[in-house]
Amino acid sequence: MPFTKTELGITAFQERSPLMNARQRAVFVMINGVRNTSTILHLTRGLNVGVEDLAHLYHQGLIGRAMVPPGGATIIDSQFQSGFAKGSQTKPAPLQRLDESGP
Image (cartoon, rainbow, N blue to C red):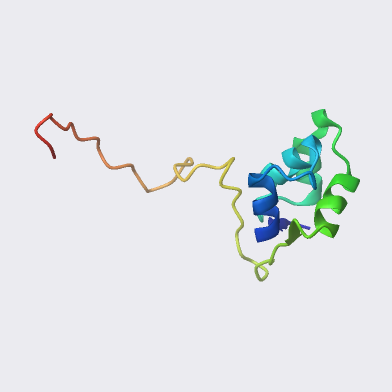
């Protein structure tokens, strides 16, 4: 099940609230509305993060369930997949040199 950050969670994270310990802060950073529980646990396995850390964030109201799109929709985890993936027709605009006098 994918999770999303709540306003309360974002505020608690920014203010370094004692509601989150270091492991839970690491989990919170990984939550993006696309990653499911197993992916989050896999990405944070070196930190000894467990399901109880996700449960704590959920029960404190710091994260919530993400809305799942209807069947057939493509979900992309933008942190790990580029818009310029192989076969993409989109090309970046060429760089322009600006001189000191302005644009």
